[in-house]
Length: 281
Image (tube, rainbow, N blue to C red):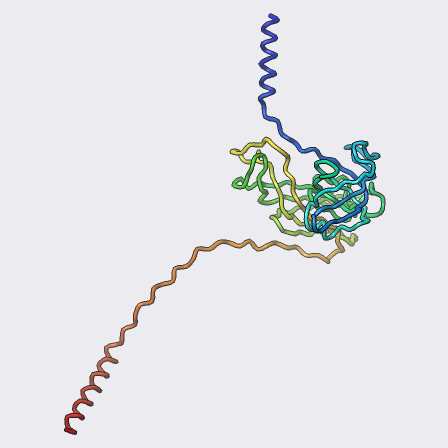
């Protein structure tokens, strides 16, 4: 009996070892101040004061260097253009503090790194902790292009974006289906002087949504540009997608023949000229 139990346990262990495991990328969310924006290298340095533990903001973990400095690649060129040294931010990164990749960087309204509201965000909105100014909250789902997949990740063909705004004790939901590079301005109710501009820069989706693809591997990340803007200052934008067209065959020109009437006239003129020449002789 004991031998049977041992054999069963060994078989289960082998199955567990053989089962594929999703290689989730470790993420860390911090709050602090931007100390450097390097346009040439495409990196942003942040002095981290606080860390998000999943429930609240706490003191920074001892896992960081004494200077609390995190250097990471920017999530987008828009982040490099908008953010400046001295900005108070909340950000999520993958990797180690000296060679990180910023998944999202959000500018905080005010000087408190753990401030309640955000003014703008660059990167993946699913990693944002706090809501935007005027209590805008953003969620999204991406649809995969199943013809463009690698491992666990597919390029996203579109994103379904939902924005909910809490205003005067009411929730105002709105949504939009967006393609890459599209900008949509989510309107606010009467009395609110600001709106939320959302641009879907590019995205990824899980290959598990495509029946023939493998879902084992890292999680998908997407890139958005989100900004609280004055009402009416920004308009929607939908990129024009070029549709490939087939080359039109150029017809071969057919030589034009002289009409019979024209040839007859030429012949008569020739005969008259010949008769005149004979008479002169």
